[in-house]
Image (cartoon, rainbow over all chains, first blue to last red; front, side, top):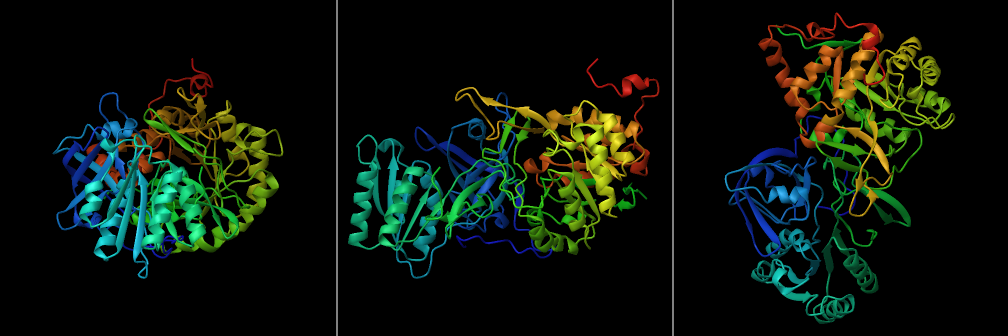
Length: 281
Length: 314
């Protein structure tokens, strides 16, 4: 796991094939609240050697009026080699996710992965802070599990529109995380309050690394806090993708590295990037 | 014994399936053994470093896609240093795709990539010619012939000219490329197209317009491949919308000696492996022993030349 730009070794073809395209059977695909659904797949061991922050490229089913053409990238919510399961948490927002929602237990779903470079937890980092909003929390769930496995202290600030759609609170609590929830309806999710809560956490326990996902608003806030306190961070980014494995160059984003603007593929060099190098867009 | 080989000029490919430029890279080696392919075709490079177009660079339209990637390139030096050596471990011939905005730059680039390890050069003459009026070289027979003659003098490697469907002079352009010394034609690049989000009223591509590829484009590229095969003696490589073994066979019957698979690889990364596996079964099912029996076998005996080379829908 690395957040810088790990190039795949450009040696021989005959290297092990690390990306798999397989059909998985749907175990369940049920709503978890008014907005989100949890998709559980029966998955072969070979695709479950994942890193937190990686994603799969899903071939959403074509049915009736729902005819997604490209695969859809989806961050991993959970990978469980012990029970042979792969989980995705998603919100129906477009044609691809609407098609995913039609999957019934027993149906087959073709997945490609695991893809991309995931989060990094350095050995000397003890206190980790996770900050995300809405479905972005799904991306951080496997990271929380890995952090727990490594006996890290975990604080999760979970943001949502309302308490009824706050995601994964119990999941983080069960991992022993200190969970702080903020919502729009309670007027606690604003940037000023988030900054106050994070500063408080830094003062109280110290924070060795910050992890986040998606939102431009959070990105700017966390970059500012990270710079101010000298705390490193990582962000999982999203971008529209076609191939998902680095060929098509469609998912590039700009990053600032050593004073220069560079372009990186979210699918290949990402989706996890250094917090300070990311550029809000 | 089934014979899957096909000849593209002096090159013999072990099978007629290869990737289309821009939809293939070293990254695919993480998915399957690239040596099963008939050839390797790299993404178009330019001499200079280029960032490419603004995002979004792709969008989907029903059952197909538009792209406006804009040829991001790490430059010719990085390509020669990093990419060409990667393919040295494979038996499949390496076809390097190049592009330039002027004939002079095209010449220099062809000279620069004519190095050990490269088996052919695919010249992407479907890109804008900045010296003339911004139209792609392959839009007109005159600019096609001019640039191809210059390139013919610049390298001893086989030259494959990649044509554009945006011309109204398909057969004339094909003949011009042949006359100038092209060893094969790749037919074709993508078709200029557009999509708009009706909610935001914004074009779906950052660059406003882009190239249509995928199954919706197949009948257009197939028509062009047929017309080109009818009008030249050099091999035609079909490219456009292939997503099944039936599509491969259709192109071969139309006159293509080999085919390139592009967009379908984004949906099914191992599709080229599957098509290569399915080819022998198809031949057996038709009591054929070689793919050469299919090439150009279209039954158009009674069609007049006026129909074969038509440039407008009748």
